[in-house]
Length: 320
Image (cartoon, rainbow, N blue to C red):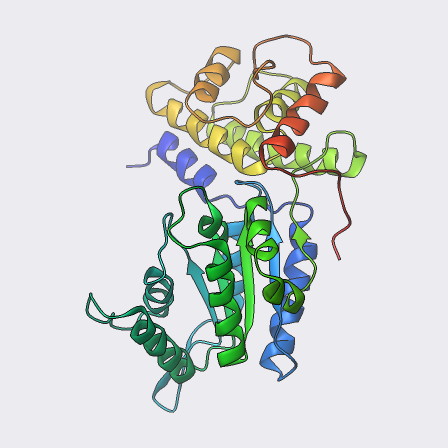
C-alpha cells in the first residue's frame, strides 16, 4: 500500500543537493586523483569547512568514481575513503584504514607498529594510491589521544612510505595538525576551503534559494505544500542555517516526518517552527528562524557570521 508521507520522507532524505562550490572542488580533487593514478607525484591535500557544508558528500562522491575492482583474482582498491571516529587513538588509525579496506582485522592487543605494518601490507596488496580521510579534524579535538605533532608524523610517514596521495577533510580545526608539524605542512598543498553560502553574494543566494525550493517542490507534489511565500521560506531557512545546506536538509527531513501524523494539506509557520526546534540550528541565537515576519539584512549577516565564528573561519579566501 502506498504511503504518501513515507514516500515524501524517503524522497527528502535521499536528496543530495550539491553546494555551488561542490562542482569546483569535486573537479579539482578528481584531477588530483587522476594524476596520482596516472603516475604523477602524489600529494597531500587538505580541505576544511564547517560541519554540514557537504564535505562527507564530496568524499563519498569521489570514492564512487573509483570503485574497487577484481584484477587477476585480486581485489583492487585504487581510492579508499576512511572515516575517522571521534577519540581516535594511534592504534585506531591503522585499524580505521583496515576496516575501510574491508580486510580481516588483526587481533586486539598488537603493538601499534605491528598494526601499521599490517596496514602498509594490505594497502600495497590492494594497489591503493589515494586515501581520503574524513573527519581528520578528530585528531586535533580537545582531549584527543594523539598529540597533533604525532598525528601529523603519522600522515607524513604513510605518505612517504607508500608514495600515495592523502586527502584530509575536516572542520577548520584541522589546521592545527599542520601548524604542529612543519614537515607535514611543507609537504602539503595550500588549504582548500568549503564555505557556506553567502546571502550578500547574488549567485550564492540564488543557488541557496534553488536548494530550498527544490525541497519545497517535493512537499507540494506530495500534497503537503509549504504555506509560506518563497521569499519568507528562503529567508527563514537561511536564518536557520547560516548558509549551510546540510542544516536545511535536516530541517526538511524533520518537516517531512511531521506529515506522518498530518493529513495532506498546507504546512504553515507552526509546522516549520516545530521542525526547527527538533534540530540543532546554525544561525545566530538572537535571530531564530520562523519567529518574526520580517528579516533584516543584518540578521542575514549575523546568521552567516555566527557559522564562520563558531568554526574559526575568517575572511573569505579564494579556492586555489
